Length: 234
Image 1 (cartoon, one colour):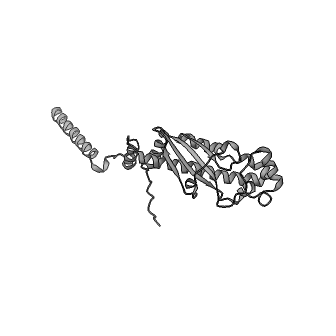
Image 2 (cartoon, rainbow, N blue to C red; image 1 turned 90 degrees about the horizontal axis):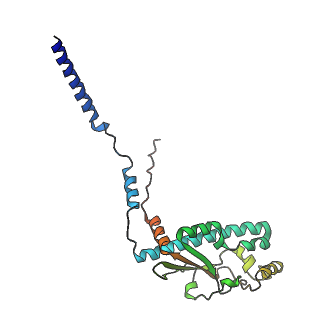
């Protein structure tokens, strides 16, 4: 009798084990890996890819446009604020966007050195002859590879903001004589007056290192995971 009970117990145990095993293997109980598309995109982002010379030139233009557009936007905002707060006397010390912290930080990302040059500069240290072809319009770009490790970027600086006339327009008309006296005191060799709206004033020039340009290409072209919005229920 005891042997029969033992045999029945073993049979019951194996039946339970088989039942649990079958339940565990049901397809709807299997936990799949989530976000496989995102994981695939991230994996692709870290793949080593060869960047061709023409792609590096394109990336140098992207980086130059991004840095100079940021600098010009910050310059407009800063000059508007400072002119409103204290006029030309307070604003003229801020007309150096290449030294702004945000611009310097972005230049660090691109491994770039930025400067502004002009044939008629306010600061004599920025004096430079610029070709007419390179200054045709504000959409003109000069992008070249100076060496294996260095790219050169240049684009015109055009006076498109009427506020700039308060320091760079016609003396006695746009610039108050008292304000120009302050400008001449700080910049005795000033030539940066007499400009009109829409006129080129000079150029941005950037020197960019190859590793910074290559990194920017990777940042701009990597795949991005886009979250899918849930459908509207009502």
